[in-house]
Length: 335
Image 1 (tube, rainbow, N blue to C red):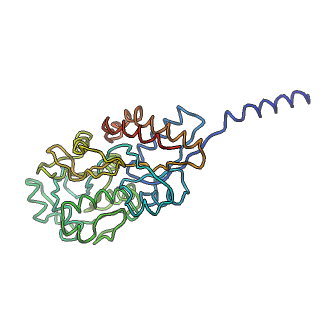
Image 2: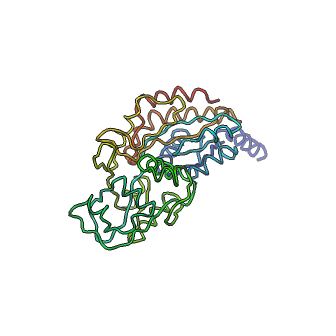
Image 3: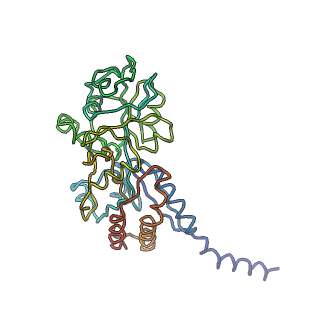
């Protein structure tokens, strides 16, 4: 009996490394969270000894945590500023992962059709100049739509957010008043409105509050069955967010910067959706644990190839092939 027990314990000790898992922890943007959840789960299915945990706490939180070294990697929809990179005590890579769209989601009683938004209307609503859904600026862009005499409830993010960065980057390009006032950033001083935490919080507020408007990543509007409008682009065409219109916006980048920090809001081209963006993983060049560095390199290579085939199902646009190849080259720096 003693021999059997000893043999059993020896087998357990020999087998235990097989069940040991390497855990990578990340945090940041809510914009790509549905896509990242899918990827991390699929990667775990391929590599049962690897677990990637991700907290969707907003881009601002992701940047702070990766800078502090409390996570293995961060994620942001707004590229880090030069000052933020200088403040970071180690080298970080911006690795683009996917493309998405920020949409104006709304809840207007009695209006079921698509609402068209001009740049002036979006800026005017968030600046507090346009306060009612039957304002002439809105009705003139939507002939035939019967808007109610309904106060507009403005909803924005309460947390540091890359989705906010994308939206305010766009507003700063189309409105000089916005550019010289609130400006762009992951967290700004809003002229008016109520806050919601995460894309989930904004989507929930819009769905529950009659008269509300909020900006959310496309998948959150789709999943919550919230109406969202088309936006007039730089070419003067009203374009609704879709895989095709986001891809058209990405096509405006004729030369990708070496550090991948680029803005594609208000892109030229008649088919381009104007509030679109890349989103990035923030990855240290040198990992404290080399094993984690190897896993991250392998994951990014998988993400840039097989992972891109999964994007369309979740309403994200895949990376242009040329960008995906540059990602695979850039990730070689990580160790």
